[in-house]
Length: 438
Ligand code: SF4
Image (cartoon, rainbow, N blue to C red; front, top):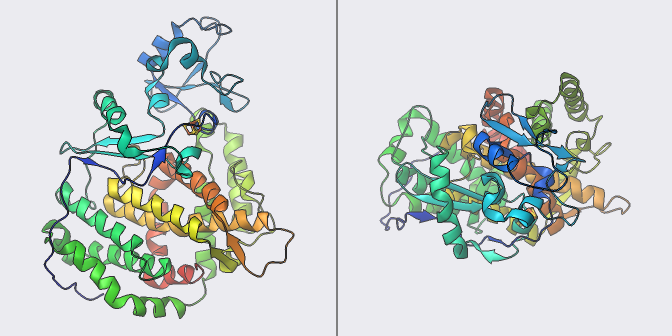
């Protein structure tokens, strides 16, 4: 990759409160969050909740909070029929109805907000896309929720949640430089001068470029024209990138297996594992992963929200798929939300560096498109469509699953997964999968 040219342009305005405005949420009461999630509560919250009078709940006789294996101070609210025991038959929370919102555990009150207070005092906020209202952009804009967001800050601080970030394990520039870099990636992904696959290709090359130790000064001593130059480079070279993608080799067998493995990672149901999921469950899961990778099994065996994919070749699906305009909008909005707020490293517990987070985010896009293509393939099953059209509903189903898993799954902090993603994003590898995205 050539060196970027320097062009004068003002720095983006600094703000102590950061969010991407085009995201909305008003709860529809669908109850999905009380079924999809395992809900962690602290010992203090558990003790407080156990003192409440709730008809049908005898906290002395029965355990409604299960200790978490690796966190002695945390418990998970028990589930019955796959949903929170406190979820009433009308889809509402019993605790909320009887004792009001403030008494609920922080995790319940916080969802679907993702709020971080950074070590330099900046607050960033976003909504979680696994919420049905958020993924459909339903409700009030995030800018109207500032009061709620700031009310959470003292509680988050008390629980020790304060974020800082490093570019990678050897480069630690000021947070403002990382924010500027994240905004540059946002500009690239949203710049529709070129197709999405061209933008992704360039973004992946940029990560590799900055990963080289001799190029780290671009980030550590960031010039004010950095963001402008970065997009300018895409505009000047996009045609060449497009040519590279169109002439890429078809994906090879190893890439196919790794991509399928990654997809299976996005389908993991880790909640059950954390709450004492037994050895036999782990073996069953390993078998389901193997069956899926070797094209004999279905993703629905791994995650119940996945379509039944037995007999469907994901690469055929992906190759034949056409991304609808509104489906693409959802995906681009998702990426913009993560980049504007610098939330693309998922749950702070994953401990991803900026570089790892960006790589995960870039790989997240073809993975989510592949999941959406699987949904579309199943939906169009009996029709002899030459092309598989991915509509908005396919994408909503896909992004809800992939966001949900990525946010919290320890799968994404595994060293071999990080290495695998890095390898798959190499220009010659990544261009092969990007060739299938249109
Ligand atoms: S998933 Fe979202 S819309 Fe549904 S109940 Fe939970 S917060 Fe409300």
